[in-house]
Amino acid sequence: MDLKEWGRIILNQRQKLGRIKEVIILNNEPEKVIDNEGKEHKVIIEDDLRKAKPTDNCIIITQNNKKNVTELMNRWEEYVQNNATIYFINSNGSKWSINARVHNFIVEEKNLKKSLMSLYESNKE
Image 1 (tube, rainbow, N blue to C red):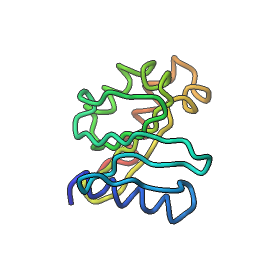
Image 2 (image 1 turned 30 degrees about the vertical axis):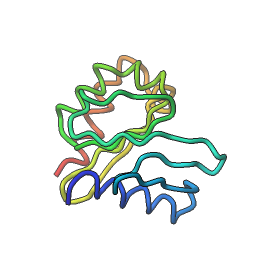
Image 3 (image 1 turned 30 degrees about the horizontal axis):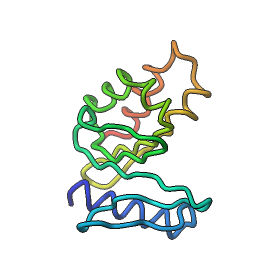
Image 4 (image 1 turned 120 degrees about the vertical axis):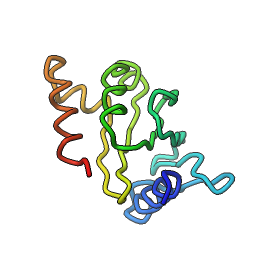
């Protein structure tokens, strides 16, 4: 299954759990979601996180690999500023996610790399 399929599955699961109100599909690909407060969140599905352009309150779905986690660290402030939620997906469908703004409150800056690498290592295939 490709990343777009996994993205659709993950968002539909979140909708069934009542965490989001609606998933809007365009050209057979998740385009945006509407949360329970009526706020829109753009969905960005990109294999390579370097190509992703985070927007305000976006949801990014990407592959779980060291290159993408390193890219997240390199552009951390951009993801925090945009309150981005990033889902890292393995080819078998296992995943982990992080909301940059929330994680930024929890972890001290000096421990950011260790924290993100720990999440990656505990969830890689």
